Image 1 (cartoon, rainbow, N blue to C red):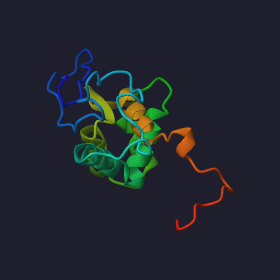
Image 2: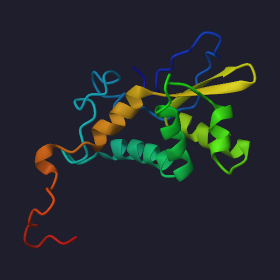
Image 3: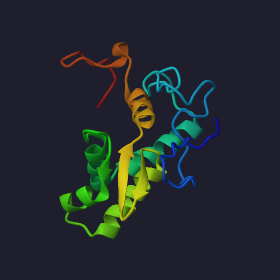
Length: 157
């Protein structure tokens, strides 16, 4: 599989792929499927190499804006898996072109995809990208400090 996110083309949609960032773990051997911890080790399990850190930083940058984070949440939590841009725009006190810009950045980060149907554009979250992101953020149980656990000597917050 290439470094680019494979795109599902829905009937009636353009086959032209959008510009996207590499999907987390898509370039690993056997990567590109499943979203398991084997393709994307958790941050706490091993130090990140430069390439993985750069890829993750691009995705986190896309999620670093409250509007984009809310948009992703609204799309990913939508029953039926799709939402029309006409339903997203009224939830914000922003102009429609600004919402479209934020949605474009989420698409470029490989977190969502879309399809034009007549006048409207419908968006859906890409589950594999969200699963990979969740697996990267997951910490092995033995590395998560318990509440109230004593700190090691010499370690400061």
